[in-house]
Amino acid sequence: MKPNPRTTKKTLKIYWRYAKRYKMGMLKIYPTMAIAQFAEDFAIPLIVSSILTKLAAGKIDELSLDKIWPILLAVVLLELFAHLLWNYVVRTFWRWQEFVMRDLNMVAFDHLSSMSYRFFSNRFAGSLVNQVNKFCGSFERLTDALTWNVYKLAVGVVFTVLVLAPKAPLVVLAILFIATLYVPLIWIYRRQQLPYNIRWSAAETKRTGQLADAVSNILAVKSFANEKLERGLMRERVDEVYGRSMDTMKLNMRQELITGALQRSINVVVIILSVWLAVTGHIQAGVIYLALTYTAAILRRLWDLNNTFRTLTRVFGDAADMTEILQIEPEVKDPDTPEVPKIKSGAIEMINVGFDYPEKKKDAQFLRNFNLSIKSGEKVGLVGPSGGGKTTITKLLQRFMDIQDGEILIDGQDITHLKQDELRKYISYVPQEPLLFHRSLSDNIGYGQTDASEKHIKNAAKLAHADEFIQELPEKYETLVGERGVKLSGGQKQRVAIARAMVREAPILVLDEATSALDSESEKLIQDALWKLMEGRTSLVIAHRLSTIQHMDRIIVLDNGKIVEEGTHQDLVKSNGLYAKLWNHQTGGFLED
Ligand SMILES: Nc1ncnc2c1ncn2[C@@H]1O[C@H](COP(=O)(O)OP(=O)(O)OP(=O)(O)O)[C@@H](O)[C@H]1O
Ligand SMILES: [Mg+2]
Image 1 (tube, rainbow, N blue to C red):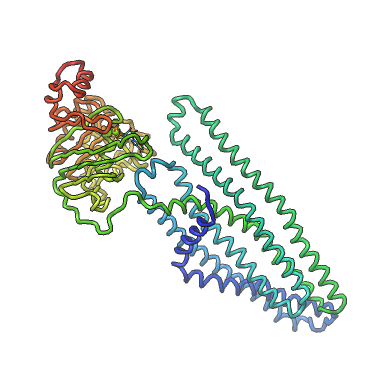
Image 2: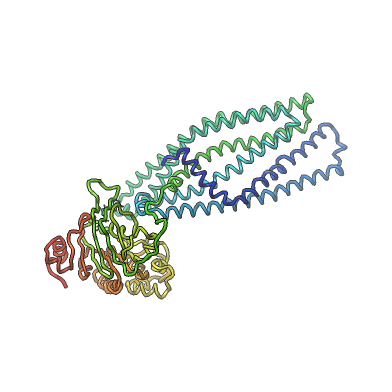
């Protein structure tokens, strides 16, 4: 994604929306900063300068101990005052930043949560995580730069003019003249840097994406012995980052030759000018010291300003991806005035449904005039060749994606009239790939019903025959399962996923290859439990292993988005179609009972 001025404006708008929620913080920070800066950088040098002037004039009697101690005490008090004020400022500022970043993190998270299934299937999880981090981190860096550099510089210039102008107007003019040349110059330079930084940031995003992809699929990498291939891909990404970074560096250093020279010339001009003015009796000797200290402070900030502008360009480049994502409307939206769910027993009707994956080739809609009706409490098996659309139907039923034509009703109610979370409460789903969190087994099973009691969880685990292996684990139900459940076997993961669905007492049950990773012995055991679970529920069970679904009330054969056969197991075997062929293939031609 290429950030443009519009994106930058949007980023600022989002930051501002949340920053101004904590106005009080800002109101406390900025005035206090100005006071602290005056005490530290201006008042103390003023005192020192008056002493120096007296020294230079040979007025030693005015500097006797009894006369000078109140002045020295004032210095101590001013330092103490400034010290406490800065402490207060930093504390308040820090808290303010954290408040805003907390909100920004939640905004990004909430937005990602609202995105549809398709959004995630098109993106790397690693990149998204990175983009959220950069988006929130950018706020911190932006406000740091603006506060500690830009604001301090502005305050410094204003105070310098106020304090020094009456004493040495020529010096002030010289500082202002060179500074006015300097600021627009680095502004122009900043614009030149922008495309470089954007390219660099894009290369970084690709690099982290590649890293995350390779690391999360490390098993595939190893099993195909493709470490070299992945290393090559990584090397390409890393080299690109290196190249972009070098381009940026070269430009920056070329520009620095000019800006650095300009800064140094301020110093030289101020020294020569103020010494000359003092020698010719136009200013007091102590003013040389004032001019030099104030100039040094301004120079420091000007030097930082260079970095600040560099930070600003990076900050907006970094935030751009997430800002763009925040503009994406959720594809699947809740209705403005959601209906109260009237779902009781979960009769399902798909009427004239038309649906297509936009990514797929366009010769024909994948599902077209698709009709499917499942009575309440009916147990339906869904079979058919791979890619036939079985999983797609379960996703449409849960509204992970929206259909383009027709309607889907549950107990007569259009599912698009319900809030998504309400709808999904009525469905227990075991997906084709069991999705486990890196949390305890008890948390993973209880996920189906977050208020489930320990007993409830254990019961479900027993029914799903997960309890057996869980009891063998060192920490039993408190054992962590590893990222995405890597510490469990495929069959164990499925049992946990089934237990999770069992915990949730929903009228509709959707099992997508829920027992495919189990050996036939365990499958048989779990089948009993699943039959119990299906009792009184509307069930949609997908299986490749046909013995799993042969006793269902009805079996639907799906091929390439169309229902090609339906009926009971016996009917279908007799009719000698696709199902009978699959069945014969799996049983070697013998009819099982
Ligand atoms: N997110 C997606 N984006 C684009 N096309 C998709 C997506 N998910 C599935 N498809 C395509 O839709 C078709 C149906 O896929 P689906 O997952 O529903 O098949 P399935 O019957 O469940 O197959 P299997 O038995 O292998 O699980 C396939 O051709 C698949 O390539
Ligand atoms: Mg599938």
